[in-house]
Length: 278
Image 1 (cartoon, helix red, strand yellow):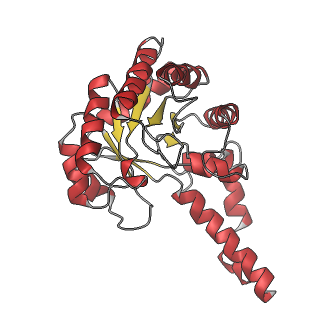
Image 2: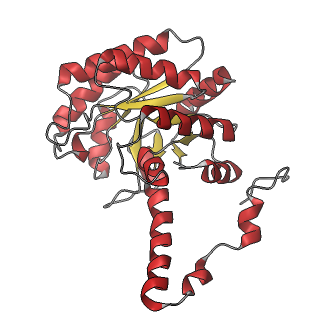
């Protein structure tokens, strides 16, 4: 039930330490992650777009919600969705995004302050806050729990302004967002500074180019939730492209030596397996 998943998802954020929330990009990868023992999943807008053969940000809201609903239906775990800027630019569209997201069984979602316009990539401060305020109002009207993550995209769009990033996250927190998230923070000191400036859980993404840190290091810096964005999808697509290039350029098939065995892979999708696959 949506209520159970939303409450279970919130409870993860209230446990001691930090937890990893991986990002599948289709039903198969979602079911593998369930079998491996993860306790919640997050969609990846980029991974979804690549699986549909388009660039990130070019997926319609209708296709995005269909994708999210498929993952929700495929797993008993709470699923939170990367919904980018939502269904539009206005605060009203942010509110509508929350209503639709909750109606398809998502346990939560993230909304960001990236406009989708490369010439003007970040919403003005006041408008960004108004969008989160509207989303919070819509969340408060729901009949079941729903975890709203508010994202500041400064570091991904040429504005590595830590003070402005903290200001935005603090404003999103005051507006009622449940989790705060600034992708692209590049070192533990910066992560620690951001986490120390906030009172609610902070999501940190790993798997981007540059430094990576362990779960223990991130927890010690104050992070609560660790996602990996498109990293798993990029890893898989990278292996696929490398193998395809080998066939095209060398006429050889050495990549098959690195492929997972058929029986091992199929076991993830076998009904009624007795225990989680390690």
